[in-house]
Image (cartoon, rainbow, N blue to C red):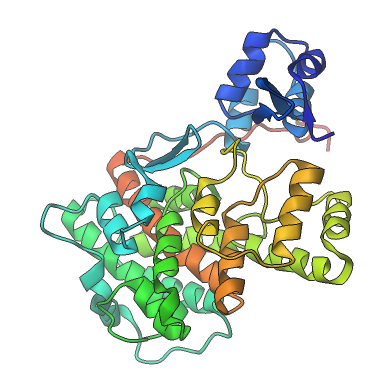
Length: 392
């Protein structure tokens, strides 16, 4: 069973009901209404078992810190975005609502706190040309092109410390333009929106509105792995480009930006053996199910819902969603939605990755600008678990 009753959860956890409800409110245990009795709630079995494995009693500070570093509790103060009550907020504004009309450039102006009357992101594309070498090797992928372009900027851009905020915001726009041009090429007018440039590059002008929405929804997501990497780099005084490069490199991992590639493997398996068998086989391997579930959203990823309501049902996506909910109690997340968008509109195989990277670059730069103001390095301590002195 994927879900358990309150009585079953309390028995496993050996805690009072108030503690169970507190863990639900903090997002540590997912809950949903019981279809058989809407007055009752059901609790996600995996979350309950994970909480039960934690030791009882007061934990030492290093154990608390270690858990915070791994998942769940914010480790840095930030005013940029938060996932709260099933919604994603950008500086207090609902990201889903913003995605109805805003462009990624307008979200950049919001997150970077552009001064009134001085939009920064849209007109800055041409500025990246001054930083680009006359000739570059041609990487085989958008990932390789992005890594190369950011590395070249990182080697020459000035450190971020002790510089005027307005100057840094203008440089942030140029870094975004550099990554955009590297990943999609010099398509169309460099001063137009990124969603428009993507639609032209992929020869899908009718898809522009959905691309715009996807970019806005990807712009930021609290202190995820890539954002934290960006902030660590910036905390040393590194340039904005170097901070973005640090964040961008984390997207090579299958647990973050590479999730869409993992989901593509699940799609292929579903086409070969059917959705139910593909999900069961994947779960039996011990790997996290790509494209489904998000621990910050007990009722499902709102970004995925916002996109999926505008997309048609496709196979094997629909059957995979049903199998994932039945077998694991997990709902589609943004990786699922981006892959569905690409399939429904005939976009390139790497379109989900490009949308993720270009959208999230806006958030990385927002966190970089915020971290500059902190003026102190991020330096966690290690909890040493190796051999003691004299034993080796």
